Length: 323
Length: 285
Image (cartoon, rainbow over the protein chains, first blue to last red):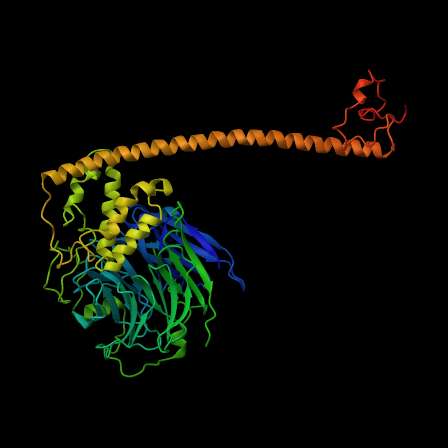
């Protein structure tokens, strides 16, 4: 399992949708509370066995970086969510002094997540601690729309992979809301957990299924057509679930990471839902991603090991999930 | 300029290759065509560049969609204004040189407490982690700062945290309480100082004794090696000519402890080879 140590705490990791061996890691100093941030773009040496990672580029920021999203339209662009409330657009083809290519400052609080529209490919969403979600397009200097209905920090927003106008947002007000960019307000309010919801994601093969991860330590799967009861409640994490993700390759597979330092793989349709657990992190696991291009290639990033040096690490697992 | 290359989409996603597979009619309107900004503008909901400022709200707001009080914002949650008011009058702000720790503490406690802290598990969990992972750099500091940091994790205002509605904020501390807290601060300050001095003294002591021991063992090692090398040399030379030596000496090496006659024989003739006569059993004699 190759490990790349970043000098700051890893916060998010994303595979490039264009290159199977490229990924970006967002990092921030001091748990992301104060201090600088840095974005690393890493290349995984190709080969049958994952080889060590080499750094293609890194960009420093004055504030912590909480999330990143690769552009779905250009292989050289990615957007970073910064703790000062701005979104910065980076272009790998530009020389380092010319980056960031654009800085979009509209949020008044930390931006906690960013997601690029995978179907229409020209827009992205940012969710922030100022309770709003903003919709941006590359051709506009300002946001196209602001969605303000949540009454507490919005921790994540995710596009539906099959409906280019629909997305879901997870908030600390214990609700998940489903939105349509053409509607003035949210189209669904799902009171999904009794505690703050930190992450949500759509199923890639069934456009009505949502997964949420919450501070109440559970992962829940919801059908938006009938959201009175969850389809599945997956418990097994010992602390708050930080991020959940549906597999791009398997309909029923969910990956989650938690502050209990575990990364778990679930199959929500079977009785023993927990099909894999990785405890290679020695501290909080906060960022995960599954490669869209290579089945079974997973990445996770976490906050430092408990030795005196505050190293984060992005780690790779070659996963062979049984059928 | 950002868009340096023509827009080419990424490889198709696995679920796109799989085709449409929904478990039933989706409750969404069919997607519109066109770019996102056009679609949003056509729907009449576009509000370009809207800036939303969050109004600072009370910790107990009951008029929200959730129907129960919300926690304070991470950035609002500091101990100076919360029910844990005692901390500001505590040693850490009393100008005794430890303000840094206070600000760290506030930041950590505030952010984690606010973000993830409206459940009891997390209060404990984070406090423990901060404490255990050596925020201040190792065992040396942890033993002295573990107390206050641990306090963040568990102690504040009951298991549900300071903002819990079932746990009303305590009344402000009286004079004697404040005075005792200040005194506690003074005492713990000097306690920390003396602890650090003691640790440093111990470290220097250990360093010096380790150095001395190194020299000592180094000398022993040198002596041993030298003896070994000389023994090898001697044995090789003597193999050619022995047994035995002229004085009845067996091999020169193993019996160094015997009284050595070689040096009692008076000055030697100048040796022919540089090392041949070193041990006195010269073949030419």
